[in-house]
Amino acid sequence: MKRVRKSAIGFILVAAVLDVMAMGIVIPVLPHLIEEFVGSNARAGLLNGLFVALWAGMQFLASPVIGSLSDQYGRRPVILISCAGLAADYVLMALAPNLWWLALGRILAGITSSSFTTIYAYMADVTSPEERARGYGLIGAAFSFGFVLGPALGGLLGHFGPRVPFWVAAALSGVAFLYGLLVLPESLPVEKRMAFSWRRANPVGAMILLKRHFELVGLAMVNFLLYFAHHVFSAVFVLYAGFKFGWGPLQVGLLLAMVGLLDMAVQGGLVGRMSKQFGDRSTMVFGLWAGAVGIALMGLAPTGPLFIAAMFPNALWGLAMPTLQALMTRRVSESEQGQLQGANMSVASIAGVASPLFFGWVYSMSVPHGREAAGIAFYIAALVLVAGALLGWVTARRADRQDNAQA
Image (cartoon, rainbow, N blue to C red; front, side, top):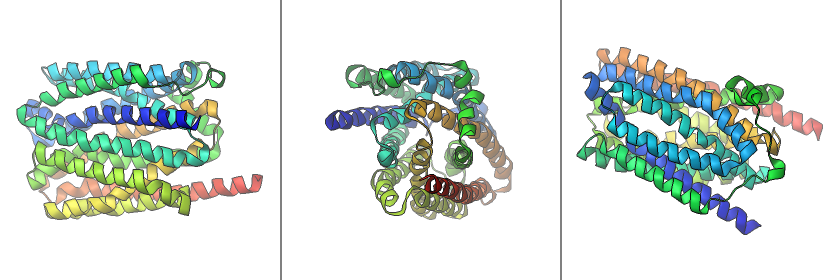
């Protein structure tokens, strides 16, 4: 049984790597493709934020549906359908003749990439509560590994044209589909499945689960703040790096690959050890504080080398997400794990709608005032993480006290 569990984890991690590689390939070139259509860096920042918000908005609507479907029909079919859908979507974006087609592509990508909900639920199926922080750390490391390879490859492919990375992304998603079709086992036994219900599968209904457990509300708010701050990267990072330091797709792709390597080292090597030694709560809070320091230093950095150096403390931010997920999964039953992850993704998607619009607007307003002012978005993101660290400490401590009292 232990061997089956290990192989199942291996299968889901490989699928995660392939999915994130496909997503990462397009990151260095999509903002520049938008800039080609509109002819303005500041306007491209605003529109890129809008495109990210479209993607997140569809995740908000689709994640609880996909999570609930996986609770009824199993994780495997949901993951397979998502991979096939992503492959088709990248083909559409590769052929997009204008911004409207790109926007449609981002909408479809938001729906199909909502299977990340199911990947987390899959890990909850095959690990014990005590092992979940480490398990989610492995997922984070797999995502990071895909993010190492994806942007670097996207930056290189971007030299051959801004659309070439989309074709390669489609091929990678197709490989992920075939891989899962051949070797991915089902993780949710039939006796543990829950019937699909639109009452739970709509975004509001999914979040009722959070309301039923008071401590989940506070942790969900931490989740919201974490994602809100993180979307400063998807909204303005590529354009900011080009505007302030003159970096093109290749340099940005390699830089994002370095970020992925650091994140992979943190989530794959540090999360399990720190969680075991200091506990999930303390590890989560430390990660949020470290991320706040790092992202503030990135905004302050006057030169490229100092900007790169600030990414090292910022990488410790990767300690927060797996431990936050582990804290939340302990508050619900096995049959509710898919619904919980759907609710989490809905919360994250709300942040993903509001944050890129906000940071895209901040960037578009700050760019006309020069390179120093362009870093304002990073300072705001750092303050958001500080708020998340304070709220996370208070909420998790209250939950721990409740558990101790019940024991």
